[in-house]
Length: 112
Length: 122
Image (spheres, one colour):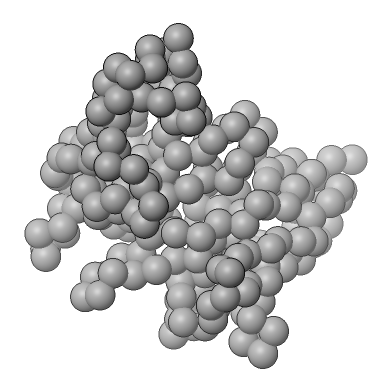
């Protein structure tokens, strides 16, 4: 199975400041069609996970444009341009190239 | 409104069985990749199983041979039959809708239920 890693695992951020989360895969997630099969999910406290980014860089419906995804192959980044209080939670990257899909360990974002 | 509602969780002894249900509204389960994801206490999510629109099913190695995913199109419901349960199966079980962008051999999970809790303990 693919192994996903993330850093940092904990991320304290001041509101209005940017934040960045790194995700790395043990194998390339770049499919033959040129797309990266990598998604980002956010799990807010006490809630179910919600889709943020799909195919590495596409925002899901309703996701604010302060969220952006980038990267290719084995290295990916989720960026929040200006963190807001409602962004608190744990962010997971997930590979969607091979079944069983694998989630990263998660990055817990907290407000300073 | 597009919605998923899980049920069927509870406290069960090791070796026991449970069947989880996931009732969908606002869309048709047979047209999507319906997935079960679980999350053990204090841990991250773990992908468990999927049933494709065409009926193919896939499982995580940790549940293969013990869990069975199925659906009832007439009830717009997806099930997860869990047999020979172990303590390590203790988790919140989420049902999620998988949607595939046109032309992609891939799906993302864009609708999630609130989950149902399974506790395996004697």
